[in-house]
Image (cartoon, rainbow, N blue to C red; front, side):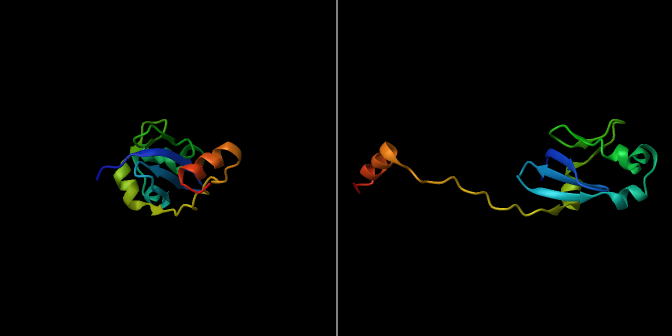
Amino acid sequence: MLHTIKKAEHLDGYKLKLHFDDRKIKVVNLENMLKKAKNMLLPLTKLDYFKLVKCDGITIYWPNGVDLCPDMLYKMGEEVTRSPRKRKSQHLSGPAKRRRLKAAGRR
């Protein structure tokens, strides 16, 4: 399956928090990959440069043109469990409450 990255956030070190198109959020640690860096990946070994990561809605990239395959990042990443969203209160008052009760036949 082809994945796309909708948002990228630098966490710490060489870790990125990536938001994918299937609504999964994964943390990817690129430190080991960058230890073997050659050529265009060399600038990414400097943490200040690594932090310049951007997302174009498809993948992540850096100013020197380096981009990484979103499917590879998806497989490498560890999924972050989301905290459940708080539901908006269903408390109604006044006319809105009366309409709902009337519609339900409980006036």
